[in-house]
Image 1 (cartoon, rainbow, N blue to C red):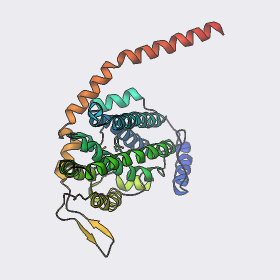
Image 2: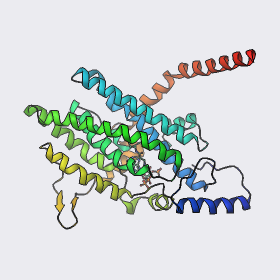
Image 3: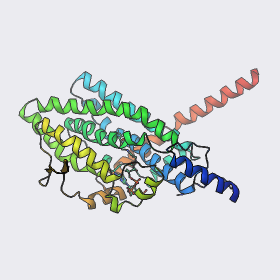
Image 4: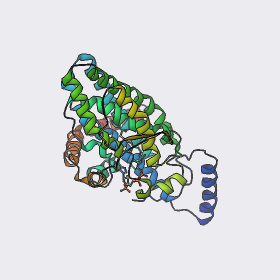
Length: 324
Ligand code: BYC
């Protein structure tokens, strides 16, 4: 999908392109009204929209456990986290709208499968330990990616990331706190923690996308500084920071090939199941259909709220005009 910018004369295009290149070269931000290549606009829309959709769809697996959180404190924390995800979706949709696409259009693209959301949210949350594993591994992976996106070249996206990263780091800590409680608990609780790691480890690694050699967008997105670090390098950063945390919990990583390379100072992993990755992002993961149908139902159920808000805004505008 390409959202073309308004009709431009060749002279404007030449000057605009030169200014765009200079801004990128100088590590400065591109702002909504700046000239930008149509491909840049389309790529930023695609990535920000996918990111926004991920935040909103990500509320489903976690909300599944709000009523069953083991204590009042854990319940309050989980509710706050799920609300944060809605807020992240909101900033990201608002940032995407600065490029001339509406929230309604973005929702339509998600609901009809023409835009994606993160593969990670197609896996079920089977036990309370999954809420710990999501916070620690999923939010942990999200932060590694998002810290770097604070330096992305599109201004509204970079600025949205600053607040999101602060909240994500609280999310990751709450996840690790759940894992610590389970790791220090009974044998059954330790087994729950290990089972959650066994199921979430590989999907968390898939969040970073395909290998660089299989990633159609990386080269151009790096040149435009939309992406600042490649998929494989970000994945490695996550692995290096997370393996010792798993060991600290007294848990194991479900990978027989995992080995620490003394020379490079990095943990090396076995091969990711790329067939599972591609089939999940093409819509054939375990929960793709369920996630989208739940989202569409929530959107339809909320129609009266949107209608009421529009009617209220119109009434208010009429009243203000009448009293002017
Ligand atoms: N899932 O050329 P590539 C969170 C797609 S959740 C689905 O490498 P790119 C949270 C990719 O879109 C995390 N699709 O692409 C919320 C492309 O498809 P199309 C949200 C994936 O864009 C609640 C194709 O594969 N974070 O924060 O250069 C609770 C080829 O890939 C995935 C973000 O969205 C995937 N994992 O790089 C807890 C971060 N990977 O459009 C946590 C922002 C790849 O060509 N996004 N694809 O058909 C990014 O940084 C980049 O878009 C990616 C992919 C690294 C994900």
